[in-house]
Image: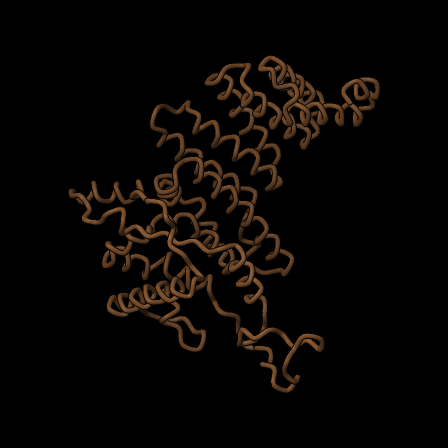
Length: 362
C-alpha cells in the first residue's frame, strides 16, 4: 500500500527519500482505514504478541520497546471478498464494471469500458522494491515503530522470495533462498516449522519458475543449476533450524523440519535427496517418540513412498512392513494412515508381480 502511493503511470520511482517514504506510509494507513470502513477488511479480534524477531532487535539495541500489543495490528478479509478481488484482478478493463454480456448487461456495447492494453500493475515488483534493497534498509532505520506495529520482519521473511519469483526475478530469488542470513532471519521470525514450510513452498515455486524460463529459452535460466540450488536451499534452512533449536539438535522441531523438507523435495522432483532427509526424520522420530508411536509410523511410511519414487522396490517393501508393524503396535490399524500404508504396499506387490501377496493385503 505504501509504495502504491509513489507510482505514476504504473512506473516505479527510481529513488525514494526518507521523507517520501514517511508520506507513503501515512497514505498506507489511510488506505487501510478506508478499506476497514468499507468492510472490505476487518481487524482481527484476537490479541497479538510481539514477534521473536522484534524482541531480538530490542535486546540488541539494549532497551525495551515502547510499543504494546495493542499497536500490533492484524487484518483479515472474508473469503467471499477475496474471491471477488481475484476475479477483478483477472479482468483487462480499467474499471470494476462487469464485462459486457448480451444476456445480463443493462447498457449498450458502445458504453462498455474498453479493455486495457497497457502494462499490468507491477504489484510484485513494488513489493520487492519495498522488501529487498535500499528502500527496505531505509524503512528499517527510520520507521522502527511502524515495523513494530505491522510486523514487517515477519512479512519480509515470509513473502520476499514469493514476490521475487512472481516478479520473474529468478536469479535474485536463488540468491535469497540459499542465503544463510536470510534463512536465519526466517527461522527467528516465523519459527522452525513454519519457516521450513515456507522454504519448501518457495523452492517448489522456484523450480516451476525456472522451468518456465527454460521453456521460453531465457538466458537467465541457463546460468542456474536448479538441482544444486534446491539442494543448497534445503540444506541452508535445515542447518539454521538445527542451530537455533532450543533444546538440542535432536528435537521434534528438527524431525518435523526434516520430514517436511523430504516431502517437499519429492514434489521438487528430487526423490533421492528426499529419501535421505526422510530417513533422517524417521530415525529421529523413533529415537524421540519410540518405535511404537503413530508419528514414527507416518515417518517410515513417507520414507517408503520416497523409495518407490527411486525404484528401490525391496527397500520400500521393508519400510512399508515396518510402518505397518508400528501402526499395529500402537493400535492404529483402522487409522487412515495405516490403511494408506497397506494400500501402498499392495500396489508395490502388484508392480513386482506378487499378486497373491497383493490380494491378501487388499
